[in-house]
Length: 258
Ligand SMILES: N[C@@H](CCC(=O)N[C@@H](CS)C(=O)NCC(=O)O)C(=O)O
Image 1: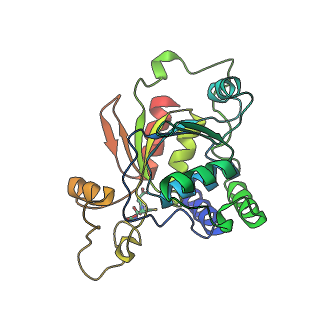
Image 2: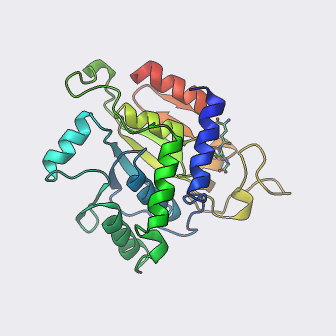
């Protein structure tokens, strides 16, 4: 797909969801054990879970389970026919299946409250999330390779990739979709926006003063390393490649793992 069209429909998907998954909590300690989410990027239920993960500022290991792929088959056989989203939280320990139960779990464990009704599987959430999937024309749903012809071992990374992103980011979504279609496990580091001046594109944050993230946050750490905050940012420890720019990242993933 043409990159401009790709980003335009991705922005539309975020708009259908009222830009949920943009703003993040200011103060949260990452749990000792990183959460694991068996996820399907284009799936309407999985999106609702990832929005909460951004809003709670939680990092998560994403195990992509696109339709027709090996991972989904493994998930189904390990968890009695389960389909994504499935959350593994070794801090409690708990395996939680389905968006609604995962929402309850995340609110209970990481906010100490019950989820508000708006976060549960209401008709509006379900419909708008389906619309968001629809406008992406099925991206991030189907595995690129079938189970019968899995990825050759030479193209399989030993280590998980690392992606800095936040759920509603129109530039990051196509990257997450490709990681899903290629069944590449990755550590998702959510960098949701924590103050007004975090808003806006990377080149001109909405601030009259020079941009500065809140101190002692993941954004602050990123800023100190790179001199700005911009997502998507991909790190591939298998090849030593670290890169900004959605278009370049998509090309890299295609050439290296596609
Ligand atoms: N040209 C870049 C644009 C990336 C960009 O502007 N990303 C936005 C999020 S969608 C961003 O990083 N905004 C600044 C921030 O979140 O602090 C690309 O294609 O990756």
